[in-house]
Amino acid sequence: MTQSYNAPKGTADLLGASARGWDFLQEVAREVFSRYGYESIYTPIFEQTEVFTRGIGEATDVVGKEMYTFEDRGGRSITLRPENTAGVVRAAIQARLTDNGAQAKLYYAGPQFRYERPQKGRQRQFYQVGAEALGQTSPFADAEMILMLWEYFTLLGLSKRSMRLLVNSMGDDACRPAYRDSVATFIREHSVELCDDCARRADTNPLRAFDCKKPECHAVMDSAPRINEVLCEACKQHNDTVLRTLDAAGLKYEIDPKLVRGLDYYTRTVFEVQVDHGLGSQNAIGGGGRYDGLFQDLGGKEAPSIGFAVGAERILLALEAEEVDILNRDDLVIYVAAAADEQREAAFAMTMELRRRGLTAVSDLQDRSLKSQFKQADKAGARYVLIIGEEEQKRGGVTIRDMESKEERFATPGSIVKMLVK
Ligand code: AMP
Image (tube, rainbow, N blue to C red):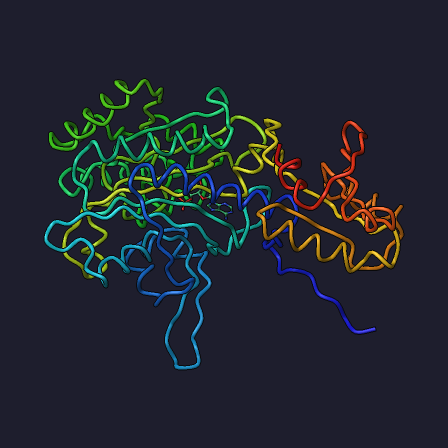
């Protein structure tokens, strides 16, 4: 026997329920985001490595430890995208979407790649849906983005009670550098109480220490300086308007001054949605923020923007924990059964005809007995079985069996569709 293979560590095939789940997330995204004026974008799954090192930042975990980077056959450094914002911004610069103060609203859905330690809700290839509002300076854009994210989650079926929305401002070039320095100083003063990673972060990326999952670091960072106390006037005003707009829309949120997101490009508004059950420590189902400097970091003209990304695996786990049955579709499935070999061609033709008329129809292609065709019909969730036997052929029609009421009646070809749709 030749060797067989499994999917690589940290990856999973989407099939059955998980494939239907991913389809569902994309369908609802299209429905919700298009109402807000978004159009879809598909960027390459790999980019020049610099798109990510410049965009996301050298000192982040994603760039420092988690990227799938390789040299292609032409000697170029290529990286599988660890997230999609940098790629979207690269594409927008290339297509000049935001030149002369223009705006663009784009959303995407697809796989991302990070070399992380796999666990529940954490994969090496994972799937994200995300949205980016490009060239938007107003705080109303931030509020709209957060409201759209919330609407998306609720429309998917997550209950408002199960979710927590965290909001913070990370400041901008005017106020963040001094704040970063004050956190770095704080870390140096407390380095013996912190884990080695966090102690090192004083020199590389001090704000990331807020994100450490270790309880001892958590406790220490609780008394670190808070960004909301040192925001510059412009950031403060921006933040106040965002929060006021959320209040006016009736959306509940928690201000979390320790919320700093893992990618360097965020400025001002950042937000995250967490769920209370079903996910353990990987409880963030989505998040995002404003990135006013990313276009320039990637060689483009200034175009302040904001976006979010949500993780498909985690949303599906959260929906499962809440026992939301997303697969309960009321699609009408019709099974066409041939009573004997003589009717197989007629059954095949009838199945094709029903499909032409827009119905979902399946039939046996493996010469099964009538009994096992009925079993198949059950498995396919068929509401009606159309039986074609010798008698039906003679009379030029079919017997329709309602699988719920078990009633049977004869129907002529002309009346079948009308009867079924009714
Ligand atoms: P980020 O791009 O890090 O802001 O992540 C946005 C969302 O993507 C998170 O809230 C998660 O839901 C999801 N996510 C990030 N990394 C992973 C991963 N390794 N596996 C599964 N989902 C992930």
